[in-house]
Image 1 (spheres, rainbow, N blue to C red):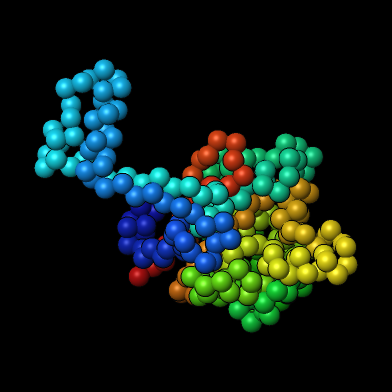
Image 2 (cartoon, rainbow, N blue to C red):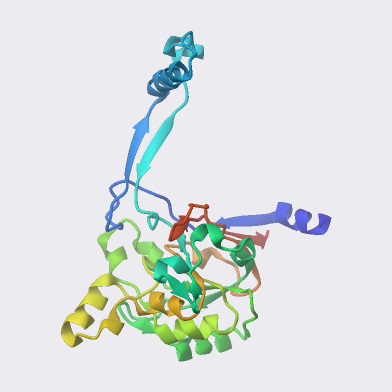
Length: 269
């Protein structure tokens, strides 16, 4: 344990997340943040004290007449970097009630990460199982149960623009099942979504009427239980492709389909 603690202390941490930003053109449902400054919150805190029967406290009683800053966020839980739980994909997974984000085992959210390079993949296409295997062969790695697989598309470089919503490849059903079938419980991607973009799914459905074009990789989670992390970033900053210690704990939101997550990689300096 002491050796592990020392390794963590001596490691460089690489933040693999993006934040929650009001008004971002890269979010289809734009989050809103109400900012309250220190004076405003001094008044709110005083009013709260009055509600619980302590009338002597006023806003002016705070040192300097200022209290504590705070914010209210109005956003879907899938804003920013987040982890999707099986409940997001459907009410059942592998024939059992789907886990919500507060039911996800913590052990799933830490492990050794493997990064697969799909920066060469054409936007709006699907990553196949064969392409997954080809990338694993290229880096000379055989997957082990419990590893966390990260799909690098390079789409995080488009964050802040509308292109972020449309110019990335997504996972296919077969590629998703192929990974989960090897004991992978968490798959991350540095793009807006895990599937191909909304606009491409919609185009294909409009042309064919085939509803299997709609969120196919997500819906693979109805058959095989797994979680996915969407909107990751900075995978290109990782110094290697395998054996990367990673922690990606989502916040616990009762009965929710996802939780905001800040994945952090630990690498030797």
